[in-house]
Length: 325
Image (cartoon, rainbow, N blue to C red; front, side, top):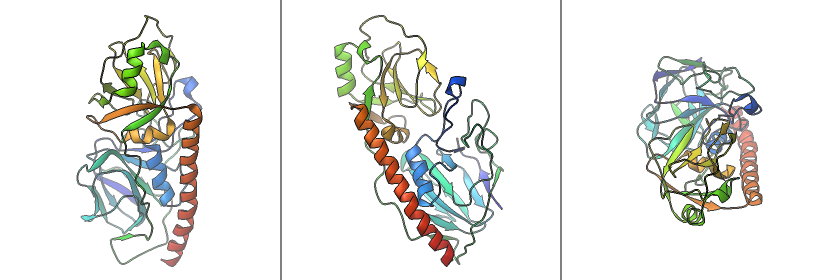
């Protein structure tokens, strides 16, 4: 009664929406890089938005369902197939016993999310299911998934069909967060940039370099100049903080960022746009557009309300479908 990994992926981990309340101890929130897509996968199954999911990078793992399950995939399109039959993103599927889920190639995005109606039988660490790779804690044994790992299900849906894979009759058709423009609010050290560098930051694009991971994205673009030689005492940072490095280039902190940093914080990508950023790959170009704190709060609140309504609707649909099957 489990999900077995028959071929290991590059970096597949269990994540939820993060571990909050421990930054004063140096433990970052972590969590899914694309929080919106992770929550969307859960919402489409009618689950709690912060339920644990599996975050996949390409090449992703191959999964053997040792028990029937209802699943949903969102985020990056890695061309998923079940028993070699292509399946669509953002739609729940019933998967029969012994079905195999594989991912063929990268069509779009950087991170795919697998949610399972059955729930995974794993324990929380500090109030979260997220894997903290640095601490070796949380998620599945505090590490990425590997070949022969078996994740047990906490319960099984009482449903069956005659097919190996059956699409449930609803899906999410809206496009998800694909543009390259990221809104930001100025950071405490925004004024440390000279006027030309502020203009360059707002008008030019920046390429994501290969030196990027779950901790941060290093950017390549016009060299930005600090107008004086002030130095910053190590200060609090968060997911989305844009720091100016000594060489005039930038780094954007991502989900596994450190809790404090000593580089000037020239901006913060708004929470509602972090999911767009999380789906960018090395070589992709991003641009920044300044906005206000009020606008950022409104966008994030609207996003969360949208997900909550979707979750409530899909929960009712799921109960009806399970009752009929």
